[in-house]
Length: 452
Ligand code: NDP
Image 1 (cartoon, rainbow, N blue to C red):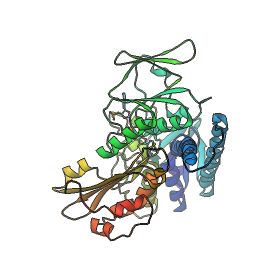
Image 2 (image 1 turned 90 degrees about the vertical axis):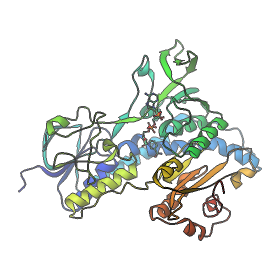
Image 3 (image 1 turned 90 degrees about the horizontal axis):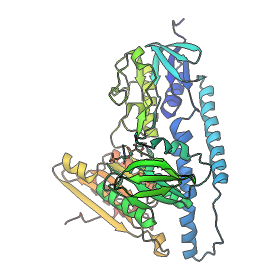
């Protein structure tokens, strides 16, 4: 009989925590998990899933326009925010139920409440004190809003999913994943959108051509993108809207102000000091390749470790942890060549090195790229162009980067990510016959490197 209540106790029932707990339970471990909010975590409850549903909702306005260009008579259209939010919430409830079912079917005990460490083997959840041989921290992150006069008036993406009504005018601050995606969402749904970014091109960290194409695309769509711009102060006005004073001194009015200025690990108040778990000065828990913290029986996965903050990565990390610690199959999550997408409009799909990164890493790099009008838009009024770019290491001929901007970019790059991850060469891309007519066929038809 073990001296502990559980073999494994997991703090946080999001993507990484749920996956780790049920895989460990499958290996015969006695597992408990606690969650202070709803089971499913950021991705399911207030992230990827509801956000993607919102991008679908938003896209209809453009689809109606495109349909007219194809000869359809589209009657008067209108968007019912409440109806959409209710439908979206029903789907989130359904997914939350599936996650609850996954835990109970695996025999994992769910304890509702926030877990706080008392020592390296003990966690308090509400009135209950729980001991466990191994503890996994999977608490994720929270939106970060900088502190300045009136910053408490701004919402984050958490609240954006539950607004009472669609704002007529919304100002979104930030130039990363969330700000750029929500700018497209609110614009598509009919809001007048201003996006404020402190840098000179959106999506820092992405390939420069991708960044330029997305920034231009948003402006083309009619989003008021203000670059090298900041907010000094937000004030509530008497009519229920907000007045933003920009760094330039100019005043901007909005009905909602949303900040998407990054996320921080949800470690404050977790009692990490009582367990002796180290964090860096931003609250991130450093871990080794097996997700082990500095304390032998405590592990951490997902956004709280700030490796690559994406759901599929947290799932892999959680699964690898369970295989290693409970399945006697030590393995680590491979963080190389992780593809990602930004569901902005235009959308981005990317895997591997940017051109700049590749030029730093390899002595010689070949770049292949093409910018063209999607066949669908030859009949519509859209001026949007697709961008396809390959980054090739010259010496080995390996394709080390694939970058796509435009319709279905994420769907396209998911398949090409296998090729890049597998180390396929440009010659093997060239030997692959395209599917005609698709946009993606361009990626196997790029023959002449840029500049040659
Ligand atoms: P990001 O790190 O992507 O972007 C943060 C943005 O806020 C950057 O443009 C940054 O500017 C800006 N910023 C940071 N601090 C300040 C400040 N004090 N004042 C003004 N601007 C500031 O974070 P997000 O919040 O957009 O998303 C968080 C994470 O969630 C992402 O990194 C990603 O891992 C994940 N995510 C993934 C999605 C997907 O896969 N599709 C979708 C949504 C989120 P600068 O560039 O100058 O630093």
